[in-house]
Amino acid sequence: MKKTAIFADVQNIYYTTRQAYGRQFNYRKLWQQVSAQGIIVAATAYATQRSDDKQHKFQNALKHIGFNVKLKPYIQRSDGSAKGDWDVGITIDIMETAKQVDTVVLLSGDGDFDRLLEKIRDDYGVQTEVYGVPALTAKSLIDATSLYHPINDDLLQ
Image 1: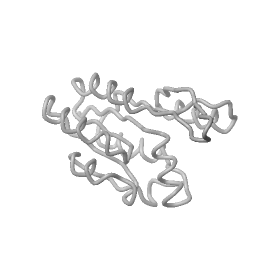
Image 2: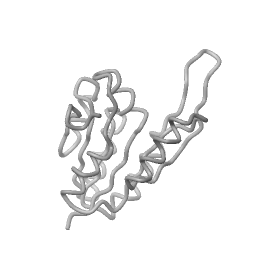
Image 3: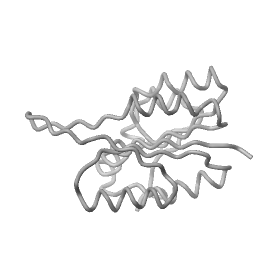
């Protein structure tokens, strides 16, 4: 049976689905879709930590589905911008996990991950799948993955 690992760039998915559709991504439907194809041996959601009841409920819902939730402090800069970037953490975890699975599923539209997907495909023979909002997913990421799944109504709530 196919072994799969899921890596969710929560901030990217939250903002892109909100911007494109004004709706939220349905992680439970994603889990059902992916688990129908094989065994999910690892699933990690990367998010920023805020002292917010809504965020805690969301993180608990992810844990209930089966995700390991990794949190990074939310940093508000003096110029009003914010930081909570998980790109390096996601990359390290994917590199470590790709050796043990058949498929890596990445939820993100961030083109910074294109080279990572090419590397794990070439070095480990891993199939890669990307879920992203079509209008907000980097073309280089779509080109780098084995299979691209556009996020649309069937994965929104």
